[in-house]
Image 1 (cartoon, helix red, strand yellow):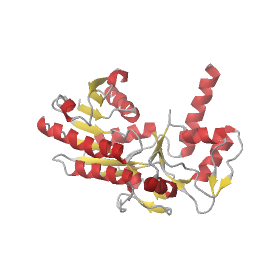
Image 2 (spheres, rainbow, N blue to C red):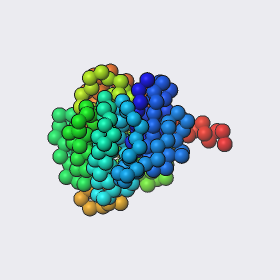
Image 3 (tube, rainbow, N blue to C red):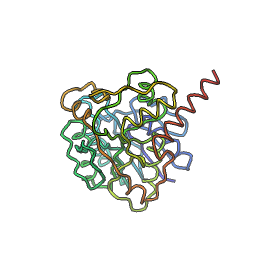
Length: 299
């Protein structure tokens, strides 16, 4: 049985924590308001942005999973979540004389600046010029430079229960298909995110970095048309601009997000023995649509 802290225990962290508890591990979920955590995850009320609240971490931790997310799409919030929060937690671990066997960091493929459909893997330059990618890269470096072994997992776009923006846009008729060169998108189902993290925790000698996306980088227009067929609605019309909307931050990062197009490869993760439950968007979105249909039948 291992003693595991999940720092920033939100949606993905909760799924991970439930599975780790079911496997017999002792799990703590750290968040500002932990009262909503399910049984099996011990609540730990703390704020990664406030070092004073991190003084009472559980002792003798074997593993620490850092999966905090920015509160909003702004440089201040990204820096708070991925730089200051990481630094504060590392300091608390050192102050507590902890000796974890491994740190795990939930990163993002947004650290890559490639946007012309290039293939991308762990060896590709990660030189994003927008604040989101830069802050996340800084968080990776902080963990890799810590006194303990650390692994960063760069996730693609996460979808799943409660993350149905693409489905909703097709159903509501607000989605449009980009004209011109394919706009490649990379994604991973939320449940597979948690399973990847648990898998990496189980590895005897993991690599320091994994790209975690499903098996099929897919042009966005292909995904939208497939969803329209499954929903029985009209295909989204073509549009000269990307249908992706800029985040609240706007500016340079919004422009980068509009241009984003790369084909991320998961060969290293696959070679480590990981098997996807949802190897492409078809299995993942198909499961969401079936669950939605079953819910409607029960109403």
